[in-house]
Image (cartoon, rainbow, N blue to C red; front, side):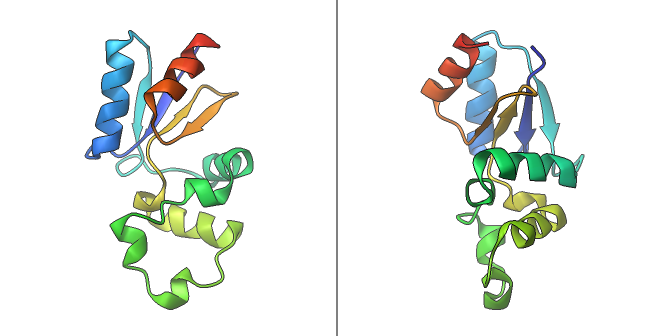
Length: 117
């Protein structure tokens, strides 16, 4: 199973996720979208599967620094545009194996993901 962990290397939640993966012997590729970027196709697929409301990180400083006008009238297309222009607004981490997707990190969710592989 080809598993990719998407996120930003310098993120505490990302560190928890890859520590969990390493401690459980899971094989994965790390994709740092701060350095490597992310394309529209990935964001559209994630938003379709998990919902743009879950993929967009509204709790982060990057989102909170937006003007009121930029935060207004959010919908799927506007959220994808914001995340494309600033990948820091993508919730971290995103774990994907091609068919399945997890947005965020909870040890029990990761355990279930790999048990069903």
